[in-house]
Structure formats: structure tokens, C-alpha cells
Length: 322
Image (cartoon, rainbow, N blue to C red; front, side, top):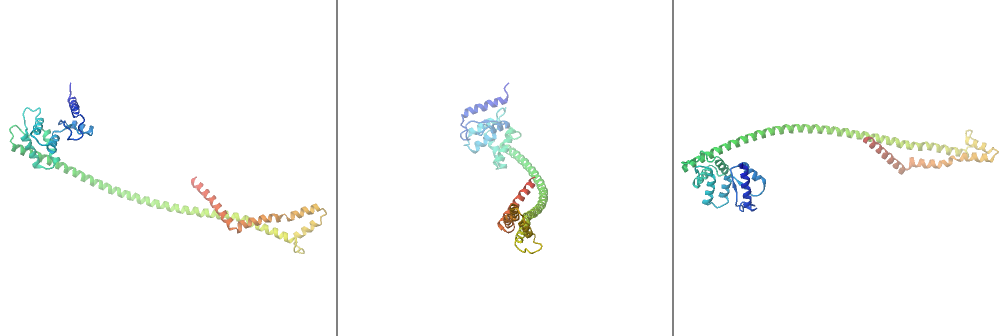
């Protein structure tokens, strides 16, 4: 059993062979397959970018009228196609001209003319042309048919426009509600951001104050060592001076200690004790150097402050990361 799909496929294959790849544009293409099958036409149109093989009758007629020279043979070929499988010949070249004139009377828009003509062909000119119809009757029937189709299209367009207006109004309302919601969310987000920024600034200020306080305490602790050494150094100096001055002062214990050492019989003991008596003078040099560096040297103090701040910064960064 051979179906209509098989016949269509064979016809299309035959036309492709006849074209021999000469179908880059409509002027180079000599072979077409005229069919009222809309599905077949869509399939052929979508399958490749070349000039379609399948054309609707109205499309073929439009090509003849718009791009090619009008001849009686063209109209005869077209009319012959429309009269296929009909027992009675309903349309000829003269009637076809009347149909086109009736359509043109109602609209000058090419797309609308093609739309009306497509419908006439699909309906096989039912209720438009009969065997005994006069040209005037055909003309009026086509006008009425075209008017009806155009009015239906107008109503359809009005409904579509109404639907679009309603959809637009609904979208506008939704957009307004959305914008209100978004504006509220943005305001809330801005307030939260300001609050967080304020808290962050306060936290940074608090951290800076704490870090400065810790740095100051650390620096004071570093200097306190030198201050204690000042006291020790002063005592060493006083102890040394009293060995040679104010010998008659009853509280001059260093002098009394020297006298006791001198009264010893052993020279070894004398020398050892005298060395111990003067040994603090050796440490006095280190004390003076440390006191100068920590209390008076600006360069050393700035270097120490930088070191303390660097260590505290590392500590605070490690704490934040933790």
C-alpha cells in the first residue's frame, strides 16, 4: 500500500533531481511542487535554507504576479491546478482575474490579499463560484467573503489587543508592587548596612583604643626597667663616692667597710674584697647605656614603639581570623 506521504516524498525527490542544485534563488529555480498541504509546506521550509520545493497555490500565484511576466499560459497552468480532481471546471483565467479584482477592491495590503486568496483556494471557492455564476456574482461573492474574513481578523486583532492591554495593565500593577517591595527591601538593606557600618566603625575605634592602650602599657613596662636601673646606678655612684668622701660622717658605711678591709692581714683577702667593692662600677657602664637607650634616645624609643605596634597588629589580626 502506497500512502500519500510516500508519493509526496517521491515527488520532492524527483524535483530535487530536476533542479540539479540550481535553486539558490527564485529566479534560478525552475521546478516547484504545488500543494495545499500546510504541514508538508512547513516541513519543506524548515529543513534547509535553499529555495523551498513545496509552495501553496496562492504563493505560486503571487510569484507569477509579482516577479514574473504575466502570460496566458501562467494563468492556464494555475487554473488547471485548481481544477484538478474536479468533475466540473469552476475557474478559468477570466474568473481568476475577477477573483483577484474582488479581493483588491476590499484591501490593497499584499499580505491580506494573500491571506484571503489562501482561504479561497483552501475552500475550493465554495459558495463563491458555481457553474452558472456570472462575473458580477463572483465579484460580489469575493467581496463579501473578503469582508467577512477581514472583519474576523479585525475582531481577532481587537481581542488580541484587549488581551495585550489587560496583560500590560496586570504587568504594570505587578511591576508597581514589585518596585514598592524592592524599594522597601532596599531601604531596609540600607538601614542594616548603615547600622553594620556604624557598629564596624565603633568596633574599629574600640580596637584601636585598646591597641593604643596596650602599646602604651608595653612601652611603659619597657621603660620602667631603665628607671629601676637609674636607681641602682645612683646607688652605685653614691657607694663609690662615699668610699673617698665624708669619711668622718658616722653613717658612711662604705668608708667603714674599706677600713675593715685594709685592717685584714691577708693581701689575698684584701684584693678580693676590694675587687668586689669596685665591681659594680663595671655594671654601671651597661646601666648607663640601657638607661640612655630607653629613656633619652629618640631613635631607640621610636624603634621600640614600631616593634610593639607590629606585634600587636599581628596579634589582633590572628584573633580576628580565629
